[in-house]
Length: 54
Figure 1: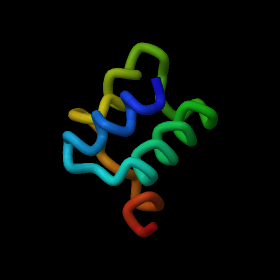
Figure 2 (figure 1 turned 90 degrees about the vertical axis):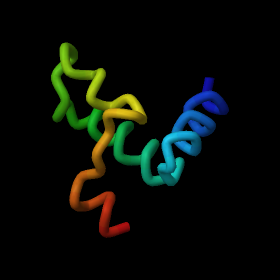
Figure 3 (figure 1 turned 90 degrees about the horizontal axis):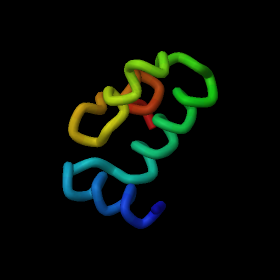
């Protein structure tokens, strides 16, 4: 499953480490409601300012 997430991030021209770190942090923080998890998919994802700075 992890390999699939990494490959999907790469296919969407994202840095997999930045993408996964941001998505996991948002899930842990609860900053994304359950009904908006689709916003975390690689093709919908936009980095937060913290992740962009890294």
